[in-house]
Length: 220
Image: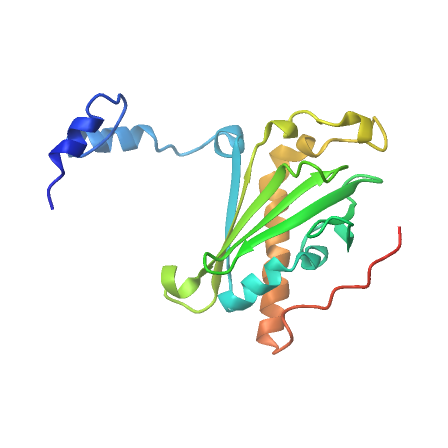
């Protein structure tokens, strides 16, 4: 298949493109070598985006079903607890025990066909859910030729991570802000992904129900 001449013409005036029509293999390999290093600074890899991934020996349909039910956050996350529905349909509120007296609000948006489960969250208020955790469940048979699932998890560094947009809502002005932990997101999320893997593989391996029943709402 040859390139469409009209397409090449449309792209000719755009600077910085690397395409086979304008870049030979030697120049491409040289560019790739420039972009490949033995060591990478933490901020260069995780400064703006934090992505982790894991293989889980559990069918993708069951992994997706587990993730899309938000109450399971109380099982596999390190610090999210005591979720209950709010008066706003689809919005839940709970405690983030990472910081004292901190409320977290969460709405789950999922798509079964795409295998995506996104957690839209925020500390202190539920009006602007700017902490967004993007997860995707991929059938491992497609990408690794083995049963089970591959789960990816990405966070983007929203500007609010650097500054609390609602300091007046903080229970204590001395409380650490969620963005103070950004440099630990890779490590912390890796710990939580390990929790997710351990729970799902244990239940699948032992023939147990994958999903648990939500706890009754706790009066606040």
